[in-house]
Each structure stands twice: as C-alpha cells, then as structure tokens.
Length: 511
Image: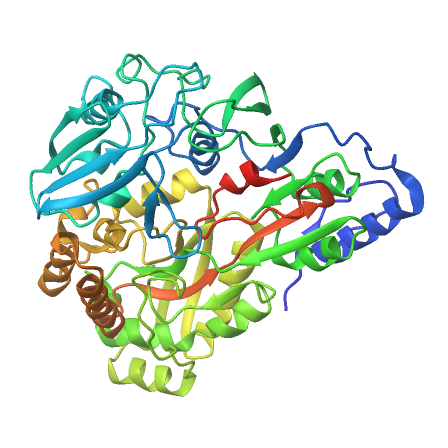
C-alpha cells in the first residue's frame, strides 16, 4: 500500500506516513509536550471543519459547511430520517395527498421563530414563493420548480398544488421556512434571518461561527452552545482534538489516521453507513469508451473491495448499486466481480488494446493515492492510465466542457433517488445539469421520468431497481464504494452521531 508523506506537525516529528506521524505526535502530546485538556465543561462544543461556510443564508448556501450550518439555524416542514432518509414531520404535524398533484399539510401550532414571532401558513407560502422568485435568485429554485401553487387555507394549514406529478415533493419540503416578511429580502450572508432551528448565531468572525441554543424553535432548546471553527490542515485538527481544545470532527480525517485518534486518551471514533456514492465517470459518447464492452471491462478490472478495506481502512463498503444499502429505495444486487482475466479478454475482443486513457481526480492526497491504485488495477489488464490531479473548480470546468475521458467523483448526499436525474437524464447534459458523461439513453430517461412521477414507495423502489440494473449493464456510471460517515469526538461530544448524509442536527441532542 502506498503511504502519504506528511509535513512535521511539531518539533521532533520526522516526515513519515500520515498515520505514523500522527501517532508519534499524539504520543508526544500524551507525554506532556502540550498543555493539559481544558477543564471548563461550560465552554461550547467545538466542531472543526476544513473550510469556511460561503454564506449562512439558506436561500443561497450550497457548500457542505454552509448547508449543514443553516440546517442548525432553520427548519423545514419535513426532516429526513437519519438512517433511511425517508421524510418525517418537522414543522408539519401531518400531511395527506388529496390527489396526485395536491398535498394538504397541517402545521404545528407550538412553534415560534427565534424572535418570538408565531409560525404559520403565511410563512410557508412566502418562503416557497421566495425560493421560486427570479428576483430572490435562490440557488435552490429547482427544488420548488414543480410547485404550481401554494395557498394558506388556515393559519395551520397549507395546500401545495403541483404543475405535474412529482414524487419527490415531501423530500423537497425539507427546505428551510423563513419568516414571511423576510423570505424575499436581500441576501443575508451573516445568518441574521429569523429561524426555527435549534440554534441562533451568537457571533461570527473569520474562521469561527458561534451558535447559541435557541429558546424557541422546532426542537427543545439544546443544552450546549456550539462553535464551528475552520481548521484547514488535517494535522492541526488532530492536534487540537488531542489537546482538548476541540470536541468533534465529522468526516475530517483520512481513514488511515483514525486508529491513532481512536487510541488517543479521551477521544472516540463512531461511524455509520453513509448515503453517498463514489463512482467512476466515463465520457461514454466518443472514443473507445463509447463501446459498452470497454466500460464494462474497466468496471470489473477494479478491485473496489480491496481499496475499501485498505486505503479507506474499512470505513467504506464496496458498491454494487448506485443507491447506498441504508437508503429506503435500495435493492440488493450481486457484487460487481473483480475479474482481471475477463476484463483483459473483453478489451481484446473489443479491439481496444493497447489502450491509453486519462483519469481526472482531486488534489486531495488520499484521492490521489486511490487514483494511483486504480491505475495499477487497470495496468494489470493492459490499460495505460494517466492520473491527472486537479483543483475542484478546474476539474468541474473540464468535466462540464467534456474535456476528459475518465474521472472519479462523489455524490455526497444521495437523499432522494431522483437526484440521479441530474446525473443521467439526457436533458441534464451540461450546462443544463451534471450528466457529464453525456449519457443519452431513451430507456434511462423513461425510468427516471417514471421514478419522478410515481408516488408509491414500493413502485418507486422497483423503478429505481430497474434503472440501476440498466446503468450497471451498460456501465453508464461505475459505482465504486459508499463511504461511512465518521465522527471523532471528545468525551463531551461522545454521544454525537452523524446522520446518513453527514449533517449535524444531533448537536442539538448533546447533554
């Protein structure tokens, strides 16, 4: 296994593999080369993140830190079950379908905004209209695109009418509800919009967001305040956790570091299966990758199980389908075999050998190591693969322009199976969507459209199972693995559990 070199984190630690270096540093710290742990149990729970939130306005937040922070400040009509991701009541008390295009929602009467203003139907109506409004310019306008009308029938009841049958409406209603008089206001990147979530903004400075328990909102007041602190360097996050200056990191460490952190005094590691998908993407409308035999050969040449077991330290599950095993719409399928001999024969039969390809990946060191292992697997079947690491923005620009052959990517939150429409439907070829492989398949389109219009969960599960079989048979996307959601916590935050999509609402339950 290839090791990743690491700059020294403190004096006396020589360059070594990442896990070994951190182990030495933690041992040195345990011996007393840093101050002791903070003993003030009243201080906020400190959550470390690798990047700053771009904005704290939920209408415009798209990066992971911003999305997860705004969901602590705001609440939607529904929230997603932390394991299955099925919609569950939040600000809604209940709902019923009047017909295929009409949903009646009864609202809770025991909720007030942080300011004390009452929550009611007019807030829901104003919020949905604001998300739809071109003047507001929400980055989430497509979420409510299928809604034709929303009206308040009473203070505690709204009716939502769809333009067309749309199965994902309940999941879409997870969007944060704003106060009616603020819903269409100018952007508020400072997080000052009145909210219904368990926390309010107490302070904000470069690199740190202070959250105080909300006295009012959709959940009981949390017991602890929270500081969300940006620490870009992985080593610095590890040192801060060990020194007792921080309490929680979610998906912020390479898997090979986790054993050293788990053995450090006062720290624990917990994990749950993640609702995500890491996959290999092929530009499948031109060149040798337009041949399905070549794409299927690449799929079976990869030893995804070994990569999950070694480079990802067992914190991932080899994928046989697009939807993760914990998802409500998941259907079991046989593992994708690792069969280099069959892959080599298929490439020879397709007349594809010798074959030289490029693979785009991120500049993250772990992702680079994984890409090089993929190159070794493909070399064993006669494919010369050049790994090209790129910054995310550059990589996405090349993918959008179609300037690639292969790439490794991740869908970080597979909360609703209809998300596959964005990645596979022929109408979603860039710039209209993220169908970067240029898939144009009438059968795929038909199944995606059926899944988006059918409301029965059982029927939808069958539709998406058929879609996954088709995608696998034609190797339109090559599923690699589903990575765990992993939390490293101090004793003060040991009860925290991330949800399947990696969000942080469990912070509100810490005692």
